[in-house]
Length: 68
Figure 1 (cartoon, rainbow, N blue to C red):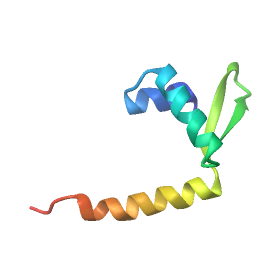
Figure 2: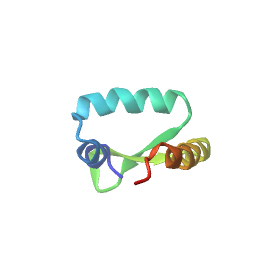
Figure 3: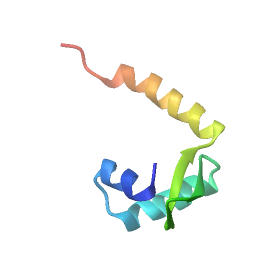
């Protein structure tokens, strides 16, 4: 997913997303790769550690959803 697509999906500004991705990258949770379709953009993907943390968050968020 591109940085622009990600910021659009999260409904936040591209500059805010950029700072957030900087932090996630420094934590080893994501990696940025050059986008072969556009030299001015990046492809964002989760690292293995990022996938593990995302899975844990997803599993734990089940318990936060109230049942009706």
